[in-house]
Picture 1 (cartoon, rainbow, N blue to C red):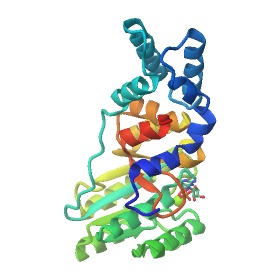
Picture 2: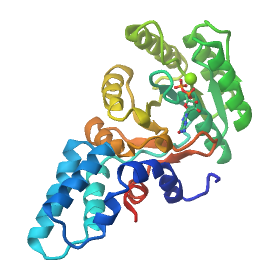
Picture 3: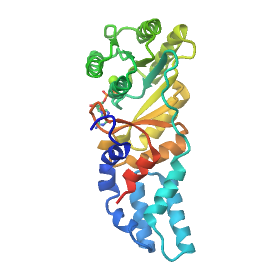
Length: 303
Ligand SMILES: Nc1nc2c(ncn2[C@@H]2O[C@H](COP(=O)(O)OP(=O)(O)O)[C@@H](O)[C@H]2O)c(=O)[nH]1
Ligand SMILES: [Mg+2]
């Protein structure tokens, strides 16, 4: 699939495991015109298994019960879609618009998919004919720098790096200085997810931020917190902690394709009050898609 494949198609692919493993048996019930108490409980159970969270699940069940009091025949699938959209449509992501040099920092714990997401995002911007510079700000592991260089080659964008163990704030400073001088609209900065402890990590992010601001006041313009869908509700705790300490502006949910808990998008959006800007649905370069509430709901609930 390429970048132009429909977001609907990609969401469907990304949510396949959730659909089959968690919500599979529910599909038959959603086609009925009335539901008895056992069937309602079965639906409730499956929504919880798909990690939609207690709050949203309750709201969906209330809606079904309410509509059954009003009329003899209902369309459970359409009702759940409708109610779900009401729950998740509140925080649209703002588009990526190049204004001068825009600096984007990717943060998150180890292994969630920061470097992969950065590579995919670089390729996406490049495919729109926008120039990108990538900064290898995870200097904690040598493999991280090599991995990023590979993505840089794949996307056809330059990668600025120093040696392993080097100062991420210094390399970020160099990258942004160079991008500003050359008029490059996008600087994507990779960061380490695991340092000695959380305080150390937050200090390092602060230091990167201060050094960016010496070159471009207002940088970083976006801070993308990357979360791994396979960890389900754990992501909510990570988001709460990073949101306070790292100035997060956007969320990216990766590995939707590897999870049966894709419904976790719902409690994340309810609780964190930040937009999910992109979703990762695979390991290929074009497997990063803009979040689309309708495509998500369709992917989760279409027959
Ligand atoms: N299936 C799948 N795997 C992913 C996705 N995003 C990242 N990965 C994989 O997750 C692993 C960790 O990714 P990486 O970018 O190195 O994480 P980082 O430590 O946060 O930089 C790698 O094996 C990636 O290929 C995704 O959307 N889907
Ligand atoms: Mg990494």
